[in-house]
Length: 205
Image 1 (cartoon, one colour):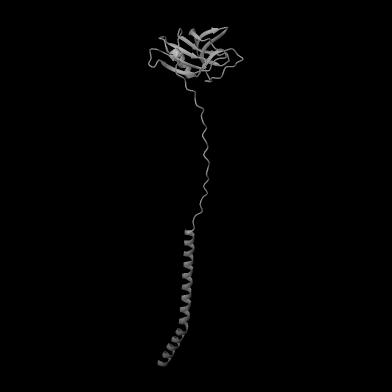
Image 2: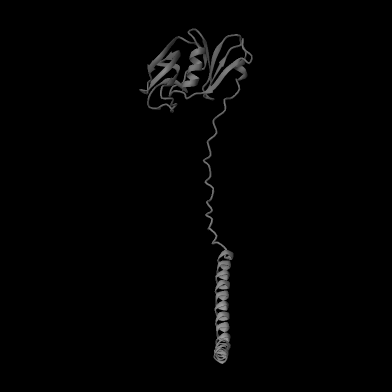
């Protein structure tokens, strides 16, 4: 029994001795391959992370120039020839195409000043008075008008201030005789409130 067991142990040792190095080499090889694989994966991930993201191309749009608004004409000061007097009056300048509402009891005495569009026929320079008024009427040009303040007449042409209901202030048709002097609706309202029957109207060249 002693020999048999001893022989068996020796054979086992020889087998271990023969297979031990092979198993060790295989294990080391597998470990090395696994390590290389892990390092490769890490390197690939690092490369992806480090790669710069593509830059979006910025589109530069040239600024659109804003339209330039045409300047509005500024009313001129009241002419010195019309500044003297104690009478409440409407002053109309044919050349300046402008109206001043003057009240000497006010400070300043010019309570309003605005531009107008004259008719195709102008009244002669001089002093007039408001003779009639109409809240609404039909103009010579066929437009509906409001706040009509009439102050004179010559050769069948009636002169007066008015405002078109549509707010327009077109130039008068030279082929049509009209003495209507047009203003905006806001200015027409101011003149209507200021110039009652008998109010003086001073017409300047």
